[in-house]
Length: 243
Image: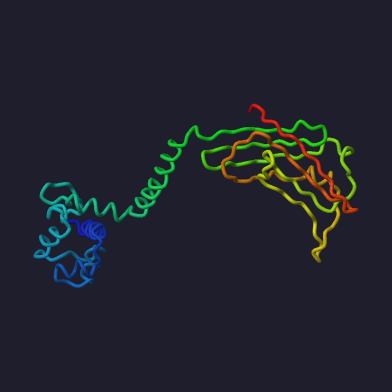
């Protein structure tokens, strides 16, 4: 009998089965201190406890005495115990994988059902003053409009003095799809003047979600108010182009 190996085997199987030292001792009619001494190799179970201990741990008596576990038909762990042990050990991993599957599968089904139902149309201005570019991504229920660029090509053709505010309107025929307003306010909420050409060339890309529409006559209307409170308008026709 190898007392040290036997102690390590008792501790290993006890932990696999989720038992504490007091729980194992209670099954054998001994206290936790006795079990602790067995597992540390300082003492060995009494001879009359060996068979009962082997049955509880589900190992052969000879294996317990040698401290080496082998697979035997009469003492191997039941399949149910083994499955429950691995489920308990990797339960967080299994739960996370299950949640991932539950999320990915519906997304995959949605993608398959909707693949090919998105269409992209690019548009561009044909104006000597302002360059406008963008895209429209259409779907059966929603459209997504990206206004990528509003660039002032010839500032001299537009009043480049200070102005009070700038409004951009993307229109489909007479319908306004969206509008963008630019103005600068001081600490007291009063409007400050700015240079129109500087603002045009620094407008960030704009994104809007809209209800599905048919686009036939796309245009960009911009209106600005100069420092003398004069309202000035300019409409730029937008043409669809091949990507």
